[in-house]
Image 1 (tube, rainbow, N blue to C red):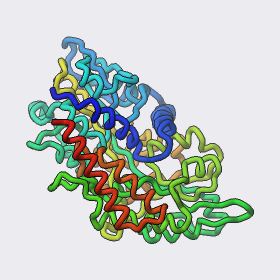
Image 2 (image 1 turned 180 degrees about the vertical axis):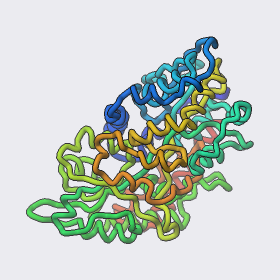
Image 3 (image 1 turned 90 degrees about the vertical axis):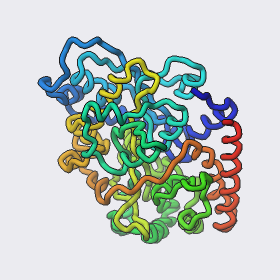
Image 4 (image 1 turned 30 degrees about the vertical axis):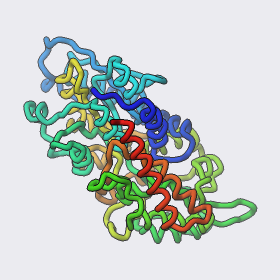
Length: 459
């Protein structure tokens, strides 16, 4: 197995952590938010583990008497708590396959997945990661191709949502299937109802274009009684582009493609908000603590944690993100979370059995949905139960998650993270007065220079 160049790898580690939550706010806050999110989701289940224990019909369980095996599982740049793994993976798998025990491996400093592979240490049997980091895991040669095993066991994937499945299939150069989607996260608009009430402005409904949103943000950005209210908080340019389905890397050329019409449109919208006074200094604290930010877009998983930690008396609700002018019936793709099985694992067959079960089991997917995770199954009955056992979603417009079909995932590559630093320079340049075309040209040049440096270090 080819190990990453050490210098490039260290640079990669710094960069990829910045996008674990696809935001530019404080990294520690992002990690804490996600950790709180999974704990909040677990605690929000009214029946706790009793629900997990009912996810398998004993009559359908694999026959007893097989050799007991213990599978190690860990996350890769997608923070997941031990409690969540226990509830949504370990217990259901144990009920289905009594001879399989799944143990959580905590990620420690110097012992992340790339570290384990590079230094030849024992690697986990199963890895949890998200779409943005999936190609990197493949580049590390970690996952095995699932096609043959799934065909042998007649695992039916037709019930899965097309977008997350197509996303992972697209990364198999020869048709390989390197993982299965487990659940999905969605970028949504969280809004402070009190601010809308104060200014007698109707709540967002999700029936907005981005042009409408910018107009609304302008109306909400005002000063009253010595308080400066803010209409909207835009995330980093990467997240903005992700919602529009914009690829960072051109699939044909293999180079950064930041001067496309799509990226120009995205940065132009950010510039319009910057010109209104909405800059990149707005954080989650303006929404949760100071309560003077009207609309806070965020991934639901991160928002759950922040609401549980800091939501308090905040009078909030949810709406779908706006649609773009060229895609009026979608409001961005989801962020799939995937399960991968190790190509070098001693218990590959059991690992594949475990991940294929939790990915396709209606019972497990129902449990995830009830606890605020978007199921990867197309089952409407499962979707209708979304958030019903998560206390913080009670009385909220949780159905907004399914207002529009999920958008197509943008193309990604193993070296996409090398372009992120370049991409981040564009909004900063805009705030400093640079025009859109010049800002993106400079960002594109830096991104491609960083990609070339990374590639040369891999040879």
